[in-house]
Image (cartoon, rainbow, N blue to C red; front, side):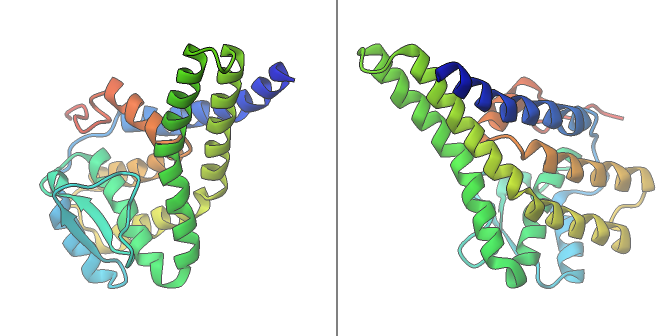
Length: 225
């Protein structure tokens, strides 16, 4: 039973890692700096897309992209960022805010899936590890349980990914229509970064945070042109 459960949980985990790496992290690692900062882009896009609302906050949590009213929560530290990767991630939040009025229930569902991806895996891992240390749970069962939890989080993120894809599509379409960037190459870079984040989001947030620390370019220091 345990080997079967481990195999079943390994499939979605491996699939998410492969897709996130091929279409997400690899693209984000090539992202570059733009000539316009996030605040300027947000002002221009929100002016053309009144449904999308945002506010800067000193402290934000990636597990909570929107507040209770559907307003995008943008970290103050990103206000002047010109990193294509950073800006793309924040624009997806703006896209979700723009869809809030018509798809509130779906966005709340997506937000819950994102939140679980940050909270549940580390909580279960710590709990099971402690139980294994004191001899309450065999190590094999700890591996099995943690694997099943990760697989469950990934499955929920996969099924709710359509919401984020639609938010990303709204943003890419708006960027193309409004021409917020002076060069086509910058526009393409930003659009590709937005699409890349929808693939990265297949992974639970805690895994994204860990993997981003391994590559400073994705974490806000992309390679310069």
